Image (cartoon, rainbow, N blue to C red; front, top):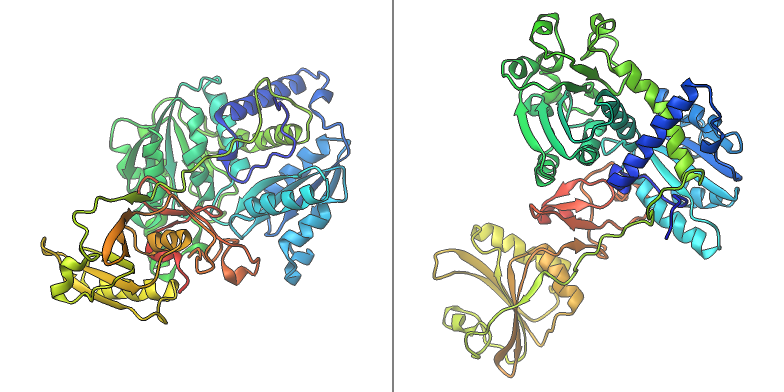
Length: 525
């Protein structure tokens, strides 16, 4: 049984199980207590020749310096700091090639990375681990210090640790209000999974519609059993009786907003900025938190609150030092857990999207439609029920998309649109002497789910399948994540093939940046 964390990475907060997070928080609590009592702290220090690379590909002060000082706690480690403005990464050098080379410079390496490109740590964890395996090197660890508007798992760790401190490390229940720019704030996105360390969770989302939490994150919280409520402003929130005792504010990320939203800047700011008039409406023992820094002109937590008991953000910021020391202790091999720390892989049944359907009669294919125009074929495939229920224009568009992506345009075939007996339109493609491969059927299911595939031999339907949206979609060159800041997007020149996981709402989630897509949106053609 593996008990150490060597070779583990933290790309998203979900990379640590609940048990592993609780272990981290208890170790951070012990470290703080020993430091206050002036006890020996050497057991938390990395003992081996470890290279800690702090690679910030976008500017940062607080997170970077927090990690620099946490790394200096580990006296045996070699610390290397890459500044964004001076880094050779700005010369269009391949991320993968660069980190492959850096991996060979120490007995073991930990990379702490901040990047505008979302999914960078996941990519490097995959590719550099392959490189290390090829050359008999230990797999390095990667720590995501913030990637675009995706996630900030190390911020989430210090946040959850601070919440636990407020609750005397009782993780039975939390009621939290998330306030501010919930659309772009990566720290609140991390809370969707981070809050699962609590057995019961109530979340109040306080933001105007233009800045509200993305719907797929809200859906994900509900699926986890969180009780979620939505409010448009702090003023509206304070008018109701059930108020949280943990308030988590984020700044408005204007640099990520379009002109139509910026025109409402004043109204948006007011809706998520705390005012003096609100003080009398607060519940007793409430604490305010903020990932910092605050906007110096328009802080959502105004400075008049700094000296009041609601101030929890200063202690929160200090906790970043302690939790990051422990994270490095774990990934550097100084701390072992009393349970199995092997990386857990999620098993997906990749075949669950193809279901054999009964054949009502054996006549020529779907040729009961023959009188309405389908030309009978002796052998081949008929794709039926294409985009059923949509408009003829949408069905025709889907037929053309299938033809283009599956390269059926050079095949002597027929297609058309019919009105079914139930009054809905549907499309078909008839392919004489063509038998679809398994890969083609999977691609078809991702282009046009809820379609029927009929295999025809000697003029009769021998096999019939109903196909739905696959649980995982990958391996097709035509796939593309619509998020331009995703590491897989072609404009970023990293030559990464994107893959998508189907969630419970039949959305397709990019495995790298976790952007939600419909099946129509994943194709570059």
